[in-house]
Image (cartoon, rainbow over all chains, first blue to last red):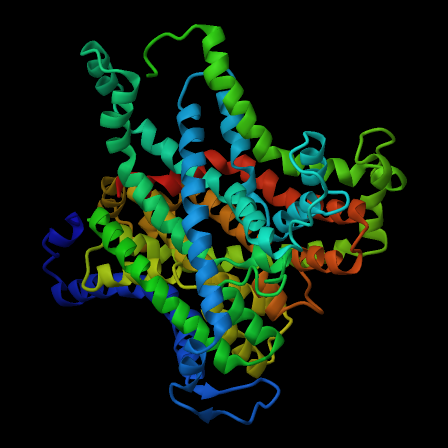
Length: 308
Length: 277
C-alpha cells in the first residue's frame, strides 16, 4: 500500500508546515476514537486487574484492601471454578463443531441453484438477528416441562415415556442449552462459508469433472482447500464469541440447577452481581481472559497477515 | 458439482427438501413463539397454541398494563445514541486507516480488533464502579457509553473495508482540484460509501437493541430497555406464556426487520475480511 499523495513532492512555498501537517493528520483523525476507547475500554480493563488484587465487596465500599494474589489462590482452590471451567470447555468443544457442521451443510445447499434460494438465504440468518433474551425466552417455552413442544413432540413419536423437565434436570440442562446455542450460531457459519464457496472459481470444477473426478473427490480436493481459510477464521471468531457470551444461559437457567450450567464468565458475573464480591469476580474474569488469550493471539496473527 | 445438470426430482430430493428441513429448524421456534402469542389464553394449556380464535389481546395488554411503550422508547434512545457515537467517532479513524501509511498503524488497528475479543464480563464490573462514582448509573448515557465499547471498533473495521473499496484516485483527483483532505473525505468518499455507512449504522442499532447484560447491570429501573423488560416479564408472569411470547415477538421485531432490509450489504462487508484473510 503506497500513498501517492505522500510521495508527491510538496509545493516549494511552505514545505515544512505541509509535510508536518501531513504526518500529523492521520493521528489527528484517529485521536477521537483512540482516546475514547482508551477511556472506556482499556482503563476499565486495567481497573479490573487492579480490583482483582484487592478485597472489594460493594456493600463495604470503603474497604479496599490490597490482598495480592489471594483472590487468584482462592479461585484455584474453588470447586465451582473448576466446574465452570469444565463446562466452558465442554460447551465450546460441542457447540462449535455442531455449528460448523450444520453451517457447512447449509452453505453447500445454499450454493446449489434452486428457485427459492434468495428467500432461503435471507431467512436462514434470522436467529442471528434475535436478541439473546428472546432466544432464551422462546427456548424456555419450548423446553417447558408441562406444555413445551419438545416434550409434546417426543412423547407423540414415542421417543420418551414421560415429560422431561429439560432445564430443571442437571443431567439434561447443559445439553439443552448447547442445542439452543447451536441453533443461534450456525447461520453465522453458513453465511461465512457460503461467501468462501462463492469465491472458488467455477473453472476448477469444470476441469475436475472433465478429468472424471467424483463428487466426493471434488469436495475433498477443491471445495475443502478453497474454504479452509474461511472456516479457520470463522471457528476462531466463534470460539471467542461463544466463550464470551453468557446471556442466553443467564436468562435460561441462571447457571442452575445447582452448578449444572455454570460457565466461567457467568460465574464471574454472578459472583459480582449477587454476592457483590467485585474483587473475587474480577479475579475470575482475569483468569478467564488469560485462558482465552491463546485463541485471541492466534486469531490476531492470522488476520494481521491477511491485512497486509 | 454445480455444473452437472441435475434433474428436477433429484434436485428436490437432494437440495430443496434438506433445505426445507433446515429452515424448519431455524424458523420453527420463532413461528411457535408467534403462534403462542396470538393463541387464546383460555385454551393455550388445554389444547395448545392454535390459530383458531387468534387475537392480538396479548399485545394490547403488553402496552396498556405492562407499559412496553416506555421500554421501547428507552431502547430506541440508547440504540440511536450508540449509532451516533459509534459512527461519528469512527468515520475519520477509518479514513486514516484506509488512506494513510503511518507509524504505529498496525498496532492501532490491532488495538481495535483486540477490543472486540475481550470478554464483556471484564468490562462490566469496572464500568459499574465507574458509573456509580460518576452518578451515571441508570441513565441513557451509561448504556450508550457501554454499548460504544463494542460499536466503535466494529464500525471502524467495517468502514475501513468499505473505504478500501473506493479507489484512491478519486480523493486524489478531488485534491488536485483544490479540495483539502477533509473536504475530499466529506464530498467524495463519504457519499460513495454511504450505503456501507448505513449498513454499519443499522448493525450497531441491532446489536445495541439486542444488548442485555449491560442494560441489566448499568440500567434497569429508570432506564429499562426492551430486553430487560422481556426478562422481567419472565420473572413476573411466569406461566402467562401468551403475554411472554408477545413480549418476545415485540422485542425481536424491529431488529429482525432491519436485519432483513440490509442483510445483503452487511454480509458482504462482514465476510469480505474473512474471505480474504
